[in-house]
Amino acid sequence: MFTRLRQTGWLLLIALLPLTGWGQRTDTLHIDLETALQVALSDNPTIQIADQEIKRVDYTKKDAWLALLPSIDVTGQYSKVLVPQTMSLAGLVIKLPTDFNANATAQLSLPLFVPALWQTIQMTTLDMQLAVEKAHASKITLRNDVTKAFYGVLLAQDSYNTLKGGLSISEEVYKQAKDRFNLGLASEFDVVTAEVQMKNLQPGLLEVENGIEQAKMLLKMLLGLEITQPVKVTGNLINYNIGMEDVNAFNLSLNANTDLRQLDIQKLQLQKALDLQRTQRMPTLAAFATYGYGGTGNKAGYSFFSQTYEPASTAWFSQGMIGGLQLNIPITGIFTNTYKEKQTKAQINQLSMQLDYLEESLNVQVRTAINSMNNAAKQAESAKSNEEMAQKGYDIALKRYETGTGIIIEVQNASLALTQAQLARRQAIASYLNAKADYDKVTGEE
Image 1 (cartoon, rainbow, N blue to C red):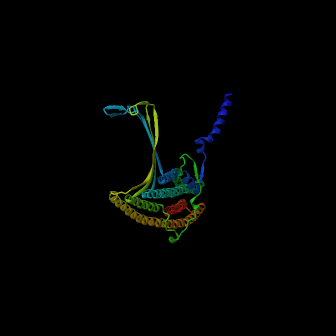
Image 2 (spheres, rainbow, N blue to C red; image 1 turned 135 degrees about the vertical axis):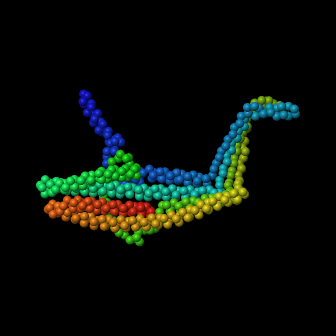
Image 3 (cartoon, rainbow, N blue to C red; image 1 turned 120 degrees about the horizontal axis):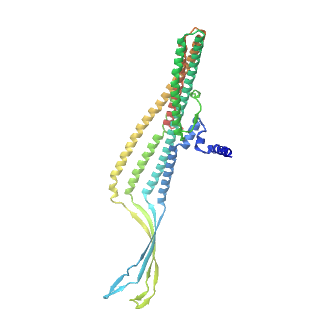
């Protein structure tokens, strides 16, 4: 009976594993560049924060429009007489029968000419444009970071595979040297040097393997994934087609650059703030209407004026409706905002200088990225030829050693040259792709 319960418990545990976090982390996520960008743009906290900022500014904009609508205020007051009021008449002190007083007032106000309200609404529109542009900038920056992190993982993986291939070659050379030594066809020196070269590659292989994990952790952080989530980055750098392109063939326009756009919007905001300050000199006109209704309650008692007993009574009455226009003309405001306007003008001039400087800096960055792409393309093309020649040299050295016409040093040098050429080619391709990612970021390409 106990055995059956234990088996049932294990089956239940296995069934529940996919529902737990541990079960989810055991599922390996296969990621290519397109998938990585999609996951990052949907799950990264930076993008989510930017979206919330857009919502906040949108609510602010809607709230500003409400200021143009009529406003209605209703006030009410009720007062209870705790100590009777008295009145002195002909030497007599008379207690008044008033018990309570109540009144209610409704007031309607409608702005007709208030320039500051319109300027405020226009400023909220610019705030929305800036929030959207910042969100767009966050996406472009995240795209650049994810792309370069993805290429970093590919470079680490390709380097690992290259070193692993070099280790396999060294193991094969060591095996042949040992077999030839056992047959008396090679010296012990060949075996020792082959073994030393083989073991020298192992620490580098472990270091690159650790680099792969670090590169993956950075990528997972940018994607908004848990660090413990297993991922497999697919693809390799050799599959990317890169080539030389003329500088004039690239788009050098900075119209889509998000940094320039943000500064442009900020400059418009300052100009709008200046217009808002100038409205403090302008008159405002508003329509208003008020309506009141009230009542008074008297206690029962003897009335001195009528010389009779008066019962308790309550009288309600309308205070009537009043309507009109209210004009407000600032007098001191004509002079008080002068220095504030001068401060804003100085800020506008500063921002204009920043725009010019930033545009020059971005032009340098664009051309630097293009030059880096062309240099990396040249290096990749040269490295490809070197790899082909290194492969040919290794094949020749190995054949010479197998036939006894060559020495082990030739094979070792040839295998090392092949590994270095393969690594150099992949590094050049990665440099080209990173420079292309920087170019896309500066020009605002998506």
